[in-house]
Amino acid sequence: MKFRRGFAEDPEINLIPLIDVLLVVLIFLAVSTTYSRFAQLQIELPSADPNSAASKMQEIHVAISADGRFAIGHTVIPVTDMAALTDLLRNAAAKLTDPVIVINADAQAPHQSVITVMEAARNAGLSRLSFATQRHANAGR
Image 1 (cartoon, one colour):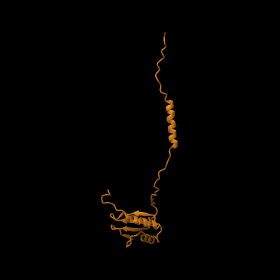
Image 2 (cartoon, one colour):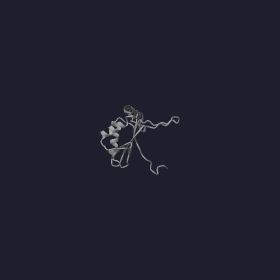
Image 3 (cartoon, helix red, strand yellow):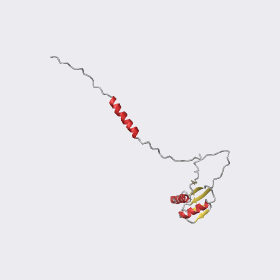
Image 4 (tube, helix red, strand yellow):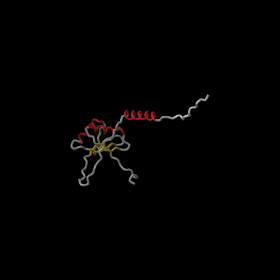
């Protein structure tokens, strides 16, 4: 009796179903992904027009000493509470249109004193703040 021997075929891996499954997973991930936009800082950069005359900004200078005392302009203020400082800033800004509060704080001034000035300016309705700094001697290279 002669038995037929079948041809030995090499097993074959069919990649078509694997590709189909991967495409379905890719489509599912693309559809279910939420695209969130990160909050960006909205800043308005200053611009200069060389043809226009330079206009001086209306500034209110607030100085903070190392021991936490305040001065508006060249006048030392005996109070340190925020309500009185708010009233003084409001009075100083009454004659000015859209003034800038320039905070001149000593390097050793308490952080809370700077925050008090910022909070008083906000309570007085003054939203434009600037911090005065000075350049180090070796920074001008």
